[in-house]
Length: 611
Ligand code: GDP
Image (cartoon, rainbow, N blue to C red):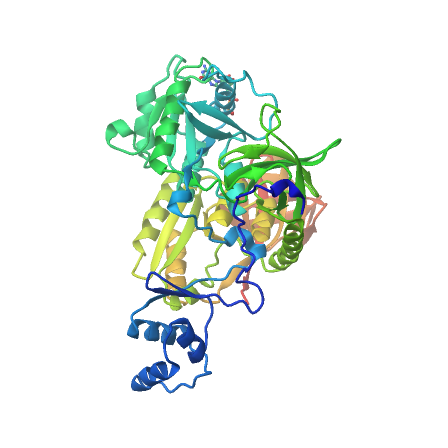
């Protein structure tokens, strides 16, 4: 180890006598609570609790449990013994050091200092997120502040009335939720931008759901108030339909009226962020080795892997050894958003670093260590762990194992995302599902909206362990693939009653083996020919699988099912065809339906028994 840490008083995040080491055994009595990490024998327990083993054996005997001194006791028995002899008890989970993101880092209250809040800006496209980010970035709030920011590192800090605020540069809920699905809860506060001349739009609604699913407070920035036709009051009323209640109406959400373009109300918005962050009492311990998250990373031609690290706890120092994702390295240079070299970064601070051995992913966790050996060992173990995890990855939840989980006795919260063809049906499904709640199962609809199942729905499901219900919508092939990769279950229905029945059956553990549909293929409508008496013939190109003459079909327009029925005739040139395969053209006439449009997708499917 170099002598750079000579005067280093920072605490290591992983104690040298880490309990996860093989054979490690750590238990202690703390304020009358017996804290232990693994089951132990009567003899061991007696020693830990300063008792005679014979007293424990006698007590258990009186309670009809015959044990010997070397017998390992289960948790229930350990609990009984503790209570009998005047101790409370708690079993602590051992987290292996390589799994450091799951480690519970506990700081003493006296070691904690306030830290900067981390803010993400979300909202509908064109409502002014980027303009707001720029307005804040370029605003000169304190005299001492250097003007504009000189390097884009994915995050930057602003100081307002002595409080620093960290802004993440990538607007939108996609980045936010992608991070969350990687287990990185970075954001403390969401600023929701709503254009005063436009109102609540689909992505506004999504952003609200994503922020709520993450449990992050929302400050509303009603933007573009300089525009004619801007109606902030109308926006506030609209937002109430989504449970965003402005403070002035007795709710919890501060609403600021701003113009990002004309620089109106920016200072007030920043002050509102300070107020909310003070309420959150965000604190961290600067006196330990740093822990945090990668905000963005790239390969710099000259300098190698370069990453922006957001320090969430502890202090990151020049020349620290860090493990990021599965790689490790030594911090060779650390700069801030003004390209200025910084020697150390306290909690809440983003810094751009070089010295890592590989380019990490945004959302990866990092931890700093006092020695290179420790960092290297842990990075190695993490890469093994990652391989294992990839083999049995699980992102979302599955309806199939719901009953098993209920059966294990815990109250289960089932997170659900609903995407339907209309807002009306999304709402109807939401309220009907909620009515199914009972003592054991809580159905929690985290997002319900009209429209096709999107990338961002999959990420939200993966981040929140949710099941997606599609009602009269069809996922595209790319979405289906993504859902599979993220292990997110998508259930598709056309009849609300069926959907509710299925959920009820799952809650009772009676999910039947049922007939499921198997998609045979898809064809794209390229040309339309209207023939009197026959109707519309769609000139199609089979884009995947095959279309069969006797199969059921559905017509999909922009990801939404507009019709379901049967094929009346399938032709190759002038001849009837039984089946037309991928890469070939065909003419399709749908029974009782002629309202086709170019670029519609005709999907063929069959009903088969599920195994
Ligand atoms: P984003 O898609 O949410 O990032 O939106 P942008 O920041 O790109 O803004 C979309 C458009 O709205 C741009 O033409 C901006 O100049 C304009 N815009 C943003 N904020 C304001 C504002 O406060 N007032 C007016 N009049 N226009 C704005």
